[in-house]
Amino acid sequence: MTIKINQIPGPKVIDLKEKEKELLATSTKCWDTPAGPVEANGIYFKDKDGNVLMDWTNGMVVVLGHNHPQWNKAVIEQLNKFVYFNGPDFVYDVQYEAAKLLTEITPGKWKKKVFFCNSGTEANEAALKLARISTKRNLVLGFIGAFHGRTAGSLSLTASKAVQRKHYSAYLNNSYSIPFPYCYRCWYNMTYPSCDLYCIRVVERYFQHNVPPEDVAAFIFEPVQGEGGYVIPPKDSFKFLKSILDKYGILMIADEVQTGFGKSGYMFASSYFEIEPDIISLAKAIGNGLPMGATVFNANLDFKEQGMHSNTFGGNPISCRSMIETYNIIVKENLLENVRKMGEYFKEKLSELMEESKTIGDVRVLGMLIGIEFVKDKKTKEPAKEIRDFVVRRAYEKGLLLLSCGQSVIRITASYIITKEQIDEGIKIIREAVREAERTLL
Image 1 (cartoon, rainbow, N blue to C red):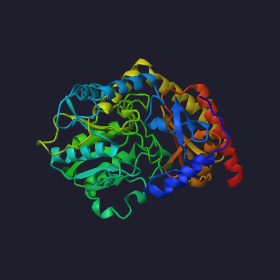
Image 2: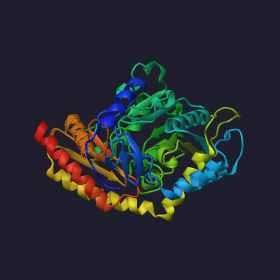
Image 3: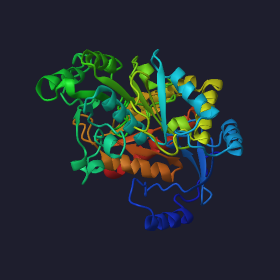
Image 4: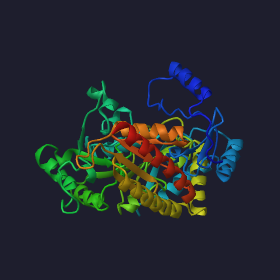
C-alpha cells in the first residue's frame, strides 16, 4: 500500500461518523479525523471511500503493523484449538507460557508472578490493590500529568485532564499527585541538570509536611507520560526516586501500558531508565491489537487469599498466544533495533522542522514514543492547541493519521516496522500542514 487520496473524509466515512454519533456513548472519538478503515496492511489502511492513508496512531497497540502474516497464523491456529477457557479458574499451556515469558523478560532478578486481565486500567487496578494489601498501607502517590485509567482506583491517580475526573471526585481517595519531571515546562522554573532533580527531591518534603511515608503503599508512574504529552524525563529521574522509596519501604509501580513491549527501543522503558520496579503494569502492545493486560510483580507480594482478585477473561488463550507471538516476532525481526534507529531518524527530521517552524516549541523522542509540542510563542511557551488541532486535521486530509495528547502535543506512535522512506513521506505532510497552520492562524 501507499498513500492514495481522493477525498478525505469521503461521503461514506462521513455517513458512518454521523450514524456512530447517534448510537455510541460520548467518549474520546476523533470526529475531525474519523478514519473509517475497511482493511489495513503494515502502516497503511484503506477507508470506506477507497482512500489509502498512513497510520501513525495504532502503533500504540499494533506494534508489528497491521495484518502481520506470522502473527495472524499463530492467532488463527489458537483460534482453531479453543477460543476461551476461564484462565483465573483453570490451567492450560498457553496461559502458563505467557506468564513464564513475562516473568523472564521483565526487569528484576527476583521471582515474579503475573495477574492477567484485559486492559491497562485493570492492570493498574490490580497493581494498586496488590500494593495496598501487601503493605497494609492506604496512600498512593503519583505524578501530575499522569494517565493510569478511568476506573475508580486508577482514576484516583490519573491527573492528566480535569474532565477525566469531573463529577466523580468524591469517589477518588487516598492519593496525592506531585509535579512530573517535565523539563520543557518545569513547575519550579528550574533547568536540568543544575536543578539537581528538585522535582524528585521534593517527594521527601511531602513526607515531612503532609504525607506520612509510613502510610504510603506505593508510588505509581509512567516512565514516559503518554496522555500527559509524551513527556520524557531525565534518564536519572527514576533511579533517584527509587532510592527515596526504598528508604521508606514504599513500592514502585511502573505503569508501562503505553511504554512497554518495545516502544522505547528497549523491551521495557524501565530498562532504559535503569530501574527494577516492584510491580509493572502492561497492556496495549502486549496484545498487538487484541485486548490484554498484565500485572507483573515481585512474588513476595501477591494477593493473600484465594478469591481476593480475579476476573473472567484474563489470560484468555487467544490473547496469550498473541502476546507470545508478538514477542517472538520482535526478537526474530530485530525490531527493537529498528525502533531505536528510526527513533533517531524521527528526532533528526523533527528537529529540523522545529528549527524552521514558529510554533513547534519542543520535540521529544524515545524510540517510537514521540511528542511534538506546539506553542504560540517560543519564548512564553503558551500552548497552541488550535495550531495542533489544525495540523492533525490537515495531515489527515493529506493522508496521514495522527493523534493529539497533552495541552498542545501531537503524539506519534508508529509501528515498529516503519522505514526511513515512510518517515520522510509523513514528515513532508506534517511540514505542509504546519506551514498552512502558521499562515492561517498566526
